Length: 335
Image 1 (cartoon, rainbow, N blue to C red):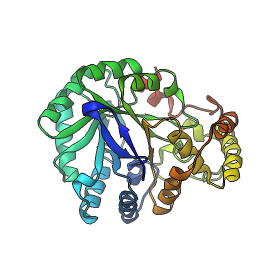
Image 2 (cartoon, one colour):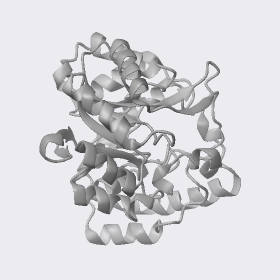
Image 3 (cartoon, helix red, strand yellow):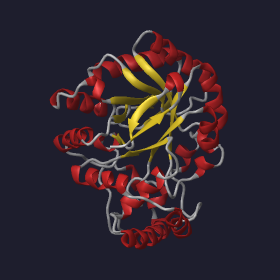
Image 4 (cartoon, one colour):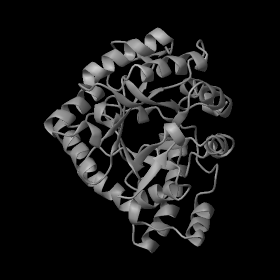
C-alpha cells in the first residue's frame, strides 16, 4: 500500500493511504459479529492498513477491548500498527450521551483505562473526541503533552474542532492530525479548516468518507436500521432527505460504472484525491467491504473526472445535517 504522512517535523506519523475506523464494530451501526470484526482487522493490517482508530466510548469500552483481543489473537507486533484513540465523551449505563470531560485529570484517568483495555503500554495518537466547552483546549493538550513526556502517548491529535481551536492547540504542542468528517457530501472543512491544517503542517484523518454507508452505493430506501443504529435518527437518512441524497448516489453510480468501479470506490478515491495530507478512515466491519474499499487506492481520478463528479454531486448538495441538532451544537468545527 502507498503511504502518506500525517503531520510534520516531530509530529510526523507515516500511515498507509487508508486507515481503519473501528466504531461500527461496537454497535453504533447495529450488531456486529466479533470474529468477523477481528478477521477484518487482521485482513486490513495484512493489506498495509496500519492506522487503527478507536474511541474509549465506542460501546462503553467494548471497542477498545475488541481491538486488544485482536492484537493478542492475531499476534500483531505492537510496532506494526498505529493506534489512534478518542476520549472525553461521557455515556451513561443506558448508552445515553452525557456531555464531554476533557479536564487534565480526566484525560489521564481515561488513558489509564484505555491502556488496560487495549493491553498496550502506549497510544500513538491521543485526541479529545470533541472540544469541552468548559475546559480551555490549552489545558487538555497540555495534559496530553505531559503523558507524552511520561512515555504513555506518542502524538497529539484533535477531532471536530475549528480553525481557531486548532491554532491554539498547536501553539501548546505540535498536532499530528485533525480527525473530521469529510466526504463528497460533507465538505465544510474546505472553508477554513483545511487551509489552517495545511498552513500549520497538520494532517487530516477523514472519517465518514461514505457518510456512514449513505453514499456507498449499497443503501436503499427500503433498508431498515437495527437496534442501536444511530442512522435511524440521522437527518440525512430520513424521508425526503434520504430520497434526495440517494438521487446524488445514483448520479455518482453512473460515473463509477463508466470507470468500471463501484460507487464506494469512487467516493473514497475522491477523498484521496483531495490531498496527500489526508488519510481516509474506512469503516468496514466485514472483509468483503474492506476489499471493496481497498480497491479505491487503484482508482485514478483525472482532473476531468473530478469536474464530472463535482457537477454530479456539487458542494452543499446533501439534504439534511450530518447529525441531529443537539449533536451539531457540540461541534466546534461547525461554528
